Amino acid sequence: MECGKEQNSARCGCTYSGCPKNGLCCECIQAHLKSRELPGCCFPPEAERTYDRSFEHFARLVGTKKV
Image (cartoon, rainbow, N blue to C red; front, side, top):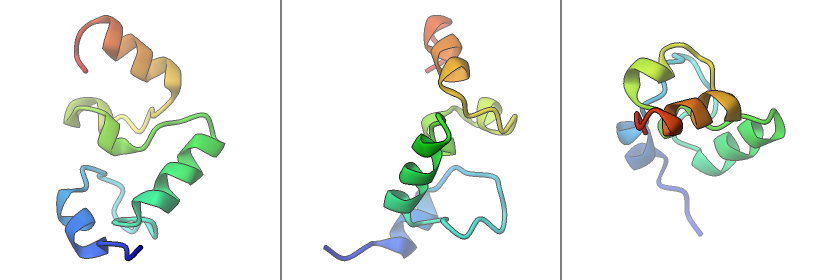
């Protein structure tokens, strides 16, 4: 399977400029899950900017219907 890095990068909501995994979704997800986190694309923009990508933060957002 070929990675659509350019297409993925265009849609990526991550605000961490300089991320070497930008557009490489498979690598990004794998790295975040290893740290018990979700990638920035799983969060609404205002929550993503906090860089708190923990499962707990995501659960709080789900609980308040922000995701």
